[in-house]
Image (tube, rainbow, N blue to C red):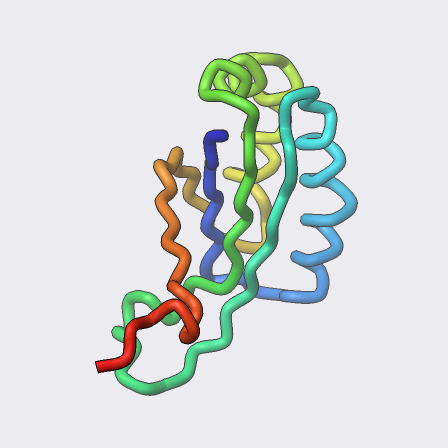
Length: 116
């Protein structure tokens, strides 16, 4: 599985942005037959030493694709071009798109850890 990410920052009207995301952006992505899921993460800074340049980041949209070829096929399609234009030229925020390689780690359960 392949993941692409869109980072939105400096959102000027969060409720309107969320409506735009759900009603205009997501339906366009769902036209992609090999898109497996979309995950939205909203940020609230903790204020504990977060660098100023990261504070404007407010929403991350994770898109999970079956393969890199499937993602590339959508990006090069007319639907992909349309959604890219909507995302990058939206009136509510600045946006940047990235392709990712994801790794994850699962911790052992406490009962699996040897006592010393």
